[in-house]
Image (cartoon, rainbow, N blue to C red; front, side, top):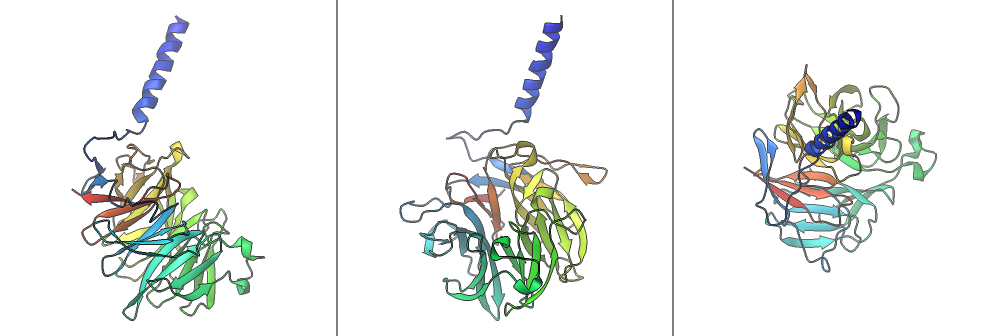
Length: 344
């Protein structure tokens, strides 16, 4: 009897494990529809694919959209750090050979002209460039802040630019500080940093300026290993936390009333190609997990999220165009080009 009970118990555990395992997308099957509620999408994995000998990629880290509708992809492949796509997936141009640690990419319009900000984790610097790659400003670690003993302590992963031109750098692979500079590159302040208090961060991987509130802009920072976003005033005062349990969130991206973020992986299935995309509304509630579990709340708290469909491996960023198409690029995922997801 005991051996039979053990057999039944083991069989039940295996069945439960199989039920919770991500569904696999089969070659030749119709394009799947992913997501929940009013944020559902059809996946197109072929959208960004190119001739690798002509336009190679390595890790595809981030994407931004300019006001002409062109999509800029940042990769740490130094044969072409930047690939510029049109919305059909055609390559319009490429440039960049000097960014071996190309990681963060932001775009900002200043007096009618758009500029890029590139974070390089190997060079440990941030660069402001024109859209065709000319460097206008280089930011190093702020010696005057007194928080870095040497350059190697500083590993910037992302930037966000305030309406007045102030530059906020997330030191996401370094000491987890948020560093504020003015538009000229002069250091102003730091906040965040590693620690156990509410205002501290753990893997401050991404940052953005949130303009959705009538009260004025705030900063949202991803604290990836804490599975949350944290909100700060533009002066660095901690305002609150947005939990996304189980989700290793990359940078927050605001489009319209919604926050979009690539989830590098599910905490419950770490380092097993378990990423997805999450979408939150203006009230900081998860409304859709693209390739992930159905959003659920219990007594006002979000329940753990995880991958349910293996549409992605390690998504690293999401870009949203004017028609609400999503473009997702990935890290450490077999040198794949970006995917497109069209709303349905």
